[in-house]
Structure formats: C-alpha cells, structure tokens
Length: 336
Image (cartoon, rainbow, N blue to C red; front, side, top):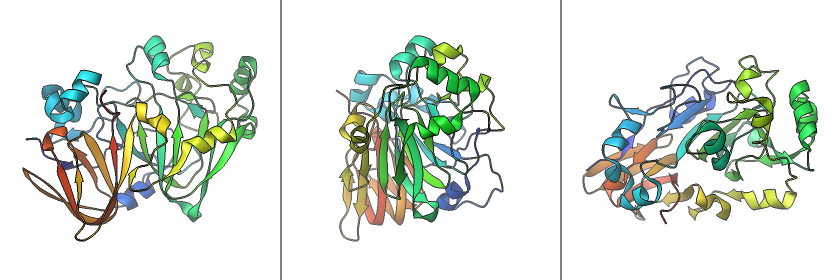
C-alpha cells in the first residue's frame, strides 16, 4: 500500500515575477531572503516550460512522475487510468504575488495539442488563502470584443495600461474562489497568497513583458511566432455575469463552479473534535489551511497541521481525518 505523505517545498527557479514570502509563512519555513521563489509546485508531474526537471516533485529521491509510471493503478486507480491514462490531470500550486503578475493567458487543450504537441492546456482556479490588507485586485477578460489587430498592437507596443484598462477588474478576499478558463487574459494583483488548481501544464502567453526584468519578448510566446501565439488569447468580451458565474467561496464539500468539473474538483474539509470526516479513495492533494489533526488509513496514521500539503494516493483507500482543522482537497476530474 502506498501511504499518504506530507510533501516538502518544491519551488522552481527562476520565475519571472517576485514573491514567495507568504508561502514561507504559510508553510512555516525559515525566511529564505529570496525574492524570486513565488510558486510551490505541489504533487507535480510536470516541469516548467522548457525545463527537463524544474518543477517535478521528488519523494525520497524519486520523482512523483516516475513513481506513478511504475505503479499507476496504485496511485491513480483503475477508473482514472481507463479515463485518462497515467496522467494525473491535476497540478496544485501555492502562489504568492510579490509583484502584480503580468497580463497573460494560457492555451486550452486543443491549442496545446495542435501547436505545442502537449497533452494539456491550462485552465485553472484560484483559491484565495490570504491577501495583504484583506483584499486585492485581479483583472480578468476584456470587457468588450478586441479585434486581432488591436491585440497585436497592444503586444507590440507593450501598452499595459490600455490592456488593463480594457479588462474587468475584480476584488478578491480570503476565502474567495475564481475559476479562470484557458484563453482568458488575466493579471493578479500583488500581495496575494493563492492555492491554484490547474491542468498539469506550465504554459503562458505573456502579453505584458517589458516592465519585468526577467522577461523578454522571446520568453512570452512559447517558442511560437507572434500571430500563432496570440491566437491562444480569448478576444471576445467577458461579461460581468460570466465572471459572477466563475466566482465562489470556499465551503464544506464541493465549492468550485460547475464549469470546473471537466478539469478538476475541489472540496472543503472541516473537521472538529469528535466529528471525523472520511475521504473516499481518490488521488488527491490535501492542503491544510488551519488547525491540526491526523489522517488515518488501513496502513497507518499521519499527523498534519496548517501549512502542510499532503499527497493522498488512491491506493491508501478510505482516509479518516480527525482533529480540529480545515483543509482543501484538490482532485482530478471524475473518471467517466
């Protein structure tokens, strides 16, 4: 039996924006003094774009990718294998925005397969864990249709102010959830700690690169020509009503908008003394956000506390959670 395991930090570098201090506080890590570690790839079987190893989770010297390849049924379950093969269909991240993240968009699955010969696009959802000052801003989708020539001009002139001004600005607070379909241009304000669930890929078309010292135009296009790269961006207007449909709040049980179900699932787990919660057998990542407790399964017991990220393989079977804690369980889409 493969047991649940508390994962160590996995913070690839370099990344093109500053951040990371809030990840260290959340995970109870010593202050690294480094500004360029804004992401923690959790239970990752994928690398950062263009890298052979950066981003892969390693457990006792062996990558999770290799572990799953050696025993996919034990990690993922037969139903998942029948539906998706040995692809976990999930990447979880902790992300801290020391800077406002540049305006960018992620290719969808069809585009990734056609233009990049990769299996997955990058639809994602943000679960807001903390925000400096209690609330922050994000910019999501264009308010009005943008024609191809206009988007190309904004990119060529690096007119970030006009791009941001054309987008829907929204306010986000701790506990908020936002689903962001692939293709939708977006930017995330500084000072936010986010648990991000996404398809397992590291793919961004970066529309705003000029102010960021670690970015160049070449970095922004995934190795594609400009016209092809910009076709990954959704130029159609995104209405306030659409964004309302993508917004939610963390709550016990399933809480993501229905549109997310084809890509990943999440549920809030709330446990109090004497009121244990059973988690059915499922490949999952459990992120403990408050409190402390234990996970128990037929093969053992694991103590957990706030800041822990736990990989739970399918083969652990039913897992009982006890103690006094809150957590988020991220999962791939349901098989079938």
